[in-house]
Length: 72
Image (cartoon, rainbow, N blue to C red; front, side):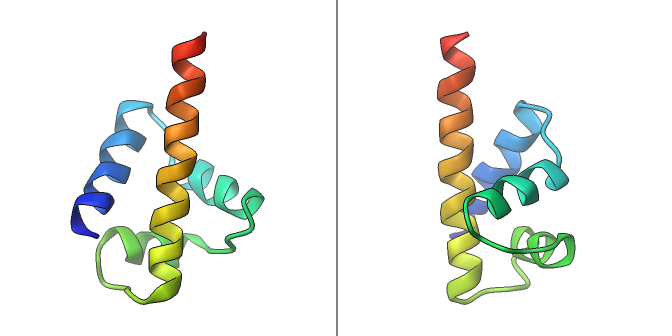
């Protein structure tokens, strides 16, 4: 989980994407969260099944984003 959180942070920075953007993408994927919860997950102060769902879905979103960027 720690490596996954680090990867999310790295990819958001690399692509210059904001937390607000990611939260919107998570909502569109059916994972409802807010800035406080998302920040707590990235800070590793919130765990559990929902935190894992946020991490897994965020990684999937970033993977798809990266693939789309390489096709341009």
